[in-house]
Every structure is written in C-alpha cells, then in structure tokens.
Picture 1 (cartoon, one colour):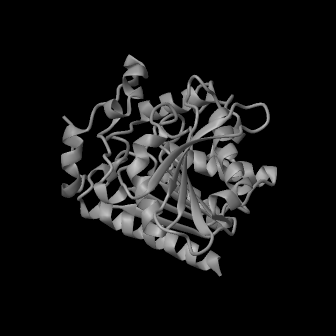
Picture 2: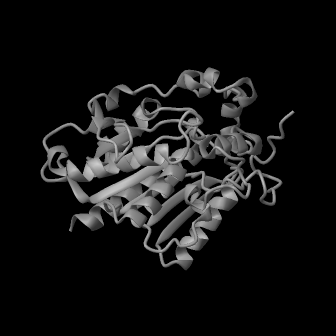
Picture 3: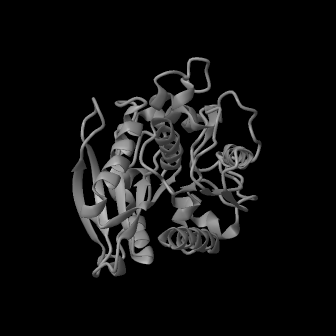
Length: 320
C-alpha cells in the first residue's frame, strides 16, 4: 500500500482516483487523453476565448505541424504578448487539446495569444521530431507576428513535465540555430534528464506517485530510441546533458517536493544561475508530479498565483 504520510493532506484525494498508467501493457490504452488523466473540461467563463486549429510549415525536411491557436476576446489595443505552450505526457501520450482550459485561462488572464503545438509523439517519432515541430511553431509565430497581432519580442515558451523538457530543448536549439527569440521560459516540473531513474543516485522520497522511475525510463527510451541513461544517448537530445546554459532565456520552475524531477530541476536552476541566467525556483512541500489536478487545493492556487505574477512581470517589462 502506498505511503501517503509525506503527501500534503489537501493533495491526497487526487491520488485515490487518478488512473493508473501502466506502460507494460502498451501505449494505446493511454493515448485517449480521458484514459490517461482526469478530464479537463472548459469552464463556461473561458469559452469567450476563441480556439482555432492551424497547420504551420514544418522546418526543412519535416512535415507541417498542427497547432491550436487561442485568441482572447475583444479588440487589441496594440500588439499582444504570446505564449507557445508545449503539453506534457512523458513524450508518449497527451495532446494539445487536453490542456485547452489552461491555454484559454492563460489567454484570458494575460490578454495574450496562446499557440499550443501538437508535436509528434514517441516512439513512433524519435528525437528530434518533436523538437522540430516545436521549433516550427516558434518560427511561425515570429514570421506571422503581424497576422497574429503579437509582439515578437514578448514570446514566452511554457510547458509542463515532458512539455517543460521540450521547452528547455527548444530554447537550447533556438540558441544554437540563431533562431527566433524567446523572452522567458515558464516550466512546471520539467522533464530534463534521462538519467533520473536510470543511472543517477535515486532519491528515496520522490517518484512514488503518478510518474515513477520505471515510467521515466520508458518515456526517455521511447523518445531517444536508445536506452535512457546509457552511453549512446546523444547529448543534444537531453537538456540536462548540455554543457553550456549561457544565453538561455530567464526561467521560472515550479516542482513538488515529492516529484521525481525534483533534483534535476533544482540542478537545472543551479546551473542556469552559474551561467548568468535569471532563474526562479519554487518547491512545493508535500506535492507530487501532477498535483495540479487537485484544482481546489491551496498548493495549486499558490503555484497559479506565482505563475501569473511571473508572466505579468515579463509581459509588463517587455512592453516598454
């Protein structure tokens, strides 16, 4: 029986009803978002945000990428800021639509345009396929800024879990390519290191709920096409293996103290600050991976307020 003693009392109820994810039975049962996680219905108050399906040109040699475009209501008084959202799902499950409520809320709260990319999933598409999809979306946002009514100097990349890992990889890739600018990274429990749960020293108190070391090995191995944590892993495929983090965008990270990704996220922020990059880290006591599904819990409200404040600061500072 699972030990809930370290879990915050307000977060325990979700663990009792969260669907079990067992990749030993294959991926197919979890590809339906409703089968993989509790549904995220669109609250009526968010329906004022317009959602459109778009297809954006793929980068050289890659297919076009699908995105969902969210536009807040009302006439813009000028160029709006924008968010490129990259969804989670361990690299192997999930889709952009699953996070529609989050994207709508972000668009409405900040009067910004949100583009959520439906990147190709592993193992059918190995690295760097998903990265190229995300890069295509970022390039399209810059190239189409006038059409979209967005300020290309105020584009934030936001992602949770695997989406946070893709966000970090995208920032590294854009830097290496001399590509479009990203003004800020906003990541929730980003999945940054294939060695977590494989060759790294295991943390005794993390990774017992929702996303385990076994699941992490499966996700990374599916993305990489080689065994996670091994000597054949291409360094360019894993953000934590990057040697140089200088020149990356300012970064916000929130993560639960019981999350499997706790130590890799702390280490990422440590390395960012050593490289001269502004970084903000919030560790939530008693919180596990995916605790945001406990929507009414004070810990979820705390993180929401922190993220909102961070975006407000970024968008206000850049607007001048």
